[in-house]
Length: 173
Image (cartoon, rainbow, N blue to C red; front, side, top):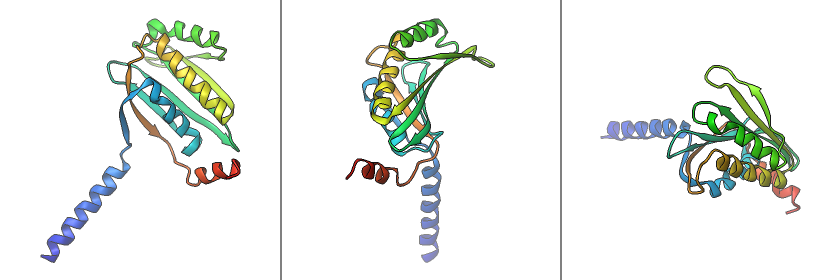
């Protein structure tokens, strides 16, 4: 009997570690709800951390990465590949971002990506989060996605332990 209990505990422990390594996927996230994921990047991720919001109703995704984090200052980077699902609207996205006073750069792509759009947003964290929210909404609109579009969101990269405490201290709490 004790062997069966030990075996069951080992199986449970193995399952815990196996599923603990898999990324958490947030499903059916509305475009307007991406704000909490944007705010989570500087709040808890190390530089290089990112999130990808895959469109649930068809091809396409939005992605945002944390390039740098300092004392309540951060740099986020948005990226959009020109590929089969974005090629028709790619120039409209670039034009829309320019008209909203973003500074997009377009690089030559590789393989199935003919061009790659990048937008870097840097400054005080609240400003960067607000501008990134605006950027995602503009990109989705210019890609022709409706306001009711839903996403599957997943994070990648390292989490920084203690960032929340650092942020509270910076605010004087």
